[in-house]
Length: 137
Image (cartoon, rainbow, N blue to C red; front, top):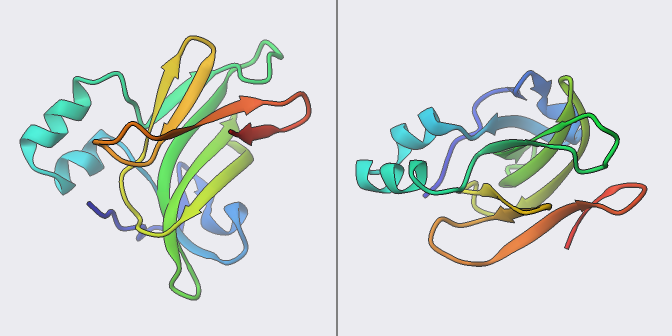
């Protein structure tokens, strides 16, 4: 399953703010999913604990970050997926995974936030605060 990143921004953040080479970006959401996959698959996702965005205080400063996933493309045609950490509409950090601009989602488990890059697999990376920066493990 692939999604198009046809906008010059994701959640009001310019694609070039993520990376100067990005020409377009799009945040994934329930509407995008419903338009892109068969109804049973969309329903399965919507009933799961996975989400396209979550609010969490990863850095422990008492203020929540908004973390969301999306897809991107660059000026040279490279595509992929990303997870972004924002606060009050400002991009704090992002991580990208070049390749197919496909499905990805977030799952909160206790104080951990997992980034899944496929709907049917169990593989994920954990997004966390390391004391000075957000990291993926």
